[in-house]
Length: 144
Image (cartoon, rainbow, N blue to C red; front, side, top):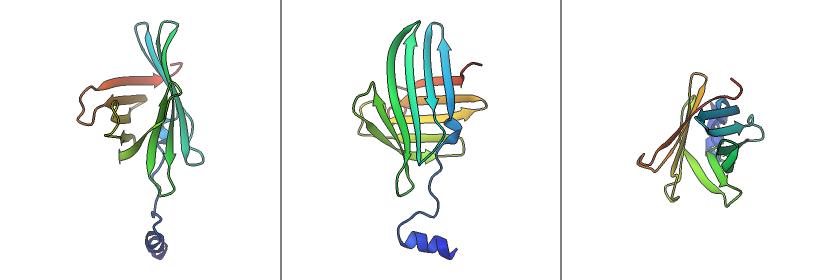
């Protein structure tokens, strides 16, 4: 208890936020000839690295490099760089045991990014802050 009080007194959180290790793995969604995939590394060094791509048939439609990073103060943020472009940062706004929401109201779209698990499935949603314009994904573990 004394250690926790000392850590708070010097501005260090008593417990840093956990990286969402339940995202780890290779995930895919297929709807007809359209497909979407995400791959997330195990947490290491305060970071998870993800890549995603979407397409139709054998054609690549888009791709993205992502990171979930724990800052020095223990907070988490999602960093997205679509197609190698400029990175946009989305700080975490809510986190549960198997769900996490990141948001950046100053970004055009998306403003909110949510991931959660439903059994063996990984669910994802992007939207505006008010939930409008939602796009949803239901990912199954790849190869299953």
